[in-house]
Image 1 (spheres, each protein chain N blue to C red):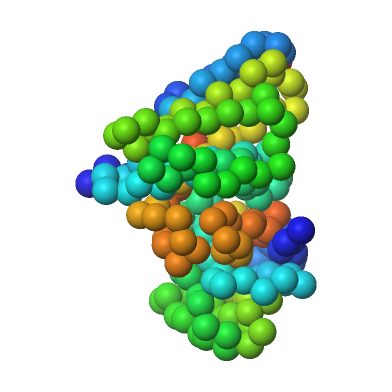
Image 2: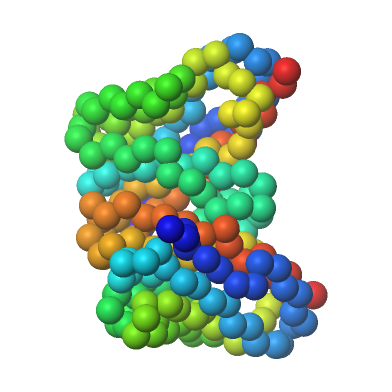
Length: 109
Length: 114
């Protein structure tokens, strides 16, 4: 069974601080995706990483895929209240996505 | 263009009842997947359909069933509802079934079983 573990489960920080969310697995995934989900809404895709060692940047967000394609990280620089939400990583396993339990981020102004 | 649309957005059912949830994929997308998201957890894969055929099934009981129509829309049916079926049910669409295709989610249907 493919499992993805995310850490931390919950993060509460002040506006302007930096943070990193981790996503780890014992399985290899062909690609890994990061989603952001707000209360009452579906997950919204932020990025897909495919190549081991790949780094992608999306404004203040930096995503990295581990060399062995088993782990990934999301780093947010100078967090803002609008970044508040549930961050989910998901590994592509065949014809389905395997999700982690998510990291709840709260950015206080 | 419209994204993935789901209906109803919220519903309340009694234990033992049956429910049908509906999904329309993004125009041009032929694959539809269903996920269950229980409060505090990530989404769990239920089904994938492509070209009206089931292409994948997650670890859910036979009370859960689905189908895809010629226009690629889909329905998820859950029979004999249990309290534990209370969750956000997400529909996702993609162009095809390969893992390289981007998956887009709808806003979900909130099901509460009382």
